[in-house]
Image (tube, rainbow over all chains, first blue to last red; front, side, top):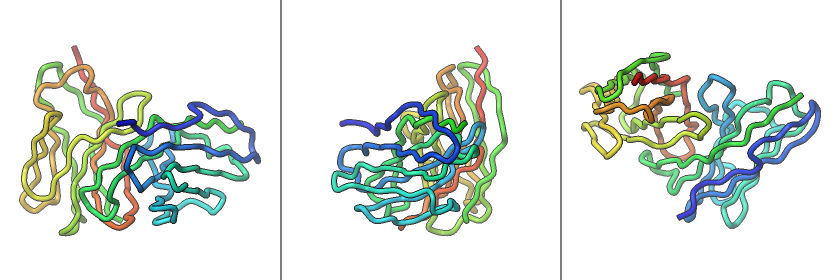
Length: 115
Length: 110
């Protein structure tokens, strides 16, 4: 069983640029959630995808967008990067978001630095 | 939004039990209590979850108050590897926006 993987591990961008982060879900999982984690804080929910449809969104502007593919891998896109976007971006896959017992499996994250 | 409150940090000695508290006074009847932990330079990992009854697994135990407004994660014998940030969250179905607080940073002394 393959765990959740994310790429790249680290990324440096400049303000105003666009970035795409990638996530490969754990085998058999059809739901993926993305989180932003600033230094010293807990993860903040960005959005969730279930079977290629956005299923829920946190308090993030539209320049944060995502995609989920038929194989359930996922992308997080951020346009017009701002300095405050510097953070660890985590993706988490799960099997059954409809259930309160659903367990999320997190990847190691992508560290984004915006200069 | 269903929020939880945890102490910022706690300290424990190696080989001793650790009780990590969490308050969730706005919990609803169908919310499950989940605990995750985040080791340095890693993503969070699942620890345990429960609804009403106390729960045990190989990693920890979860004690849930009778009114469900608080819970305690119990690590029976802390090891240095247990040094991490522990998050208590409430889980709802159907795309509920999972809310993580700042968690409790556990320090384990040798």
